[in-house]
Image (tube, rainbow, N blue to C red; front, top):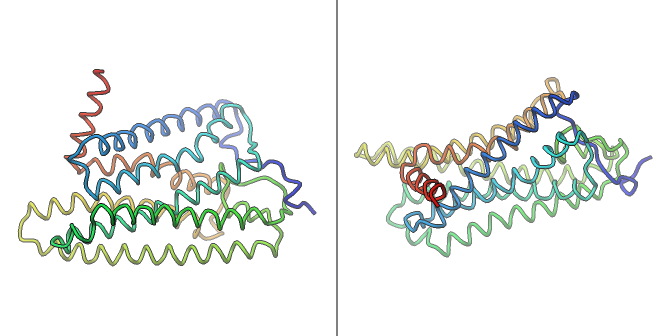
Length: 309
């Protein structure tokens, strides 16, 4: 029997078998990674440097950009390095770090998306109370709670997962260290502790999702009652990007972990993992700036300043 003390490294799933395809994947992911760095970096710079964006909505967007940068930087650089150097290995410590930061950042992001739904609900359904309910102190507390919930979840899951004895080797069927894939390597009875923790987390996620759905039901009812077409357009321009990000985030994760076993395969799991780990951090800046003329104008200004200095 192989126990966890004898595992010094894990073997991640390779994107391709041939050297040419490995280099192709490296180039593709390098482009996506640079796009994510550029997009989220522009949002961070625009919100931090322009006083017109010092509002609760943009404060939460700044936090989302930070989480997206951290999320894609947790998994993609190691995958690119493995593709470039034609290796599959990741150290035991590196795998544990990947699991911790992945759970921390994804959990924090979902909590933050819930907070952002509350912000939009108050702004549209209770505009007269917006200043008192979503002041600077309340924003800081809600953002800290989102980051804190992700941290506590990461500590719980990482400690539980990496305390399990491993009996099924060290080959992980994913391009990064993911809890469900590590559980497949554990002994048959030992993994139940982590399954219990996962059930608890899924219950919290479902509660947050239900809150987001109910918030947007109220938001759309309020928007459709607005007499001004300009007011409706402005409200939709601030709500639809957030709703699109929530849908992209949740749908990919749900499909990745709730798809029927009959259609599951290593190649499909790999594609789905790319969709929920790599794609959202790269496209979120595009989604938020597409309909937001104010943010788009300031981001263009930032680009021009960088080019001409």
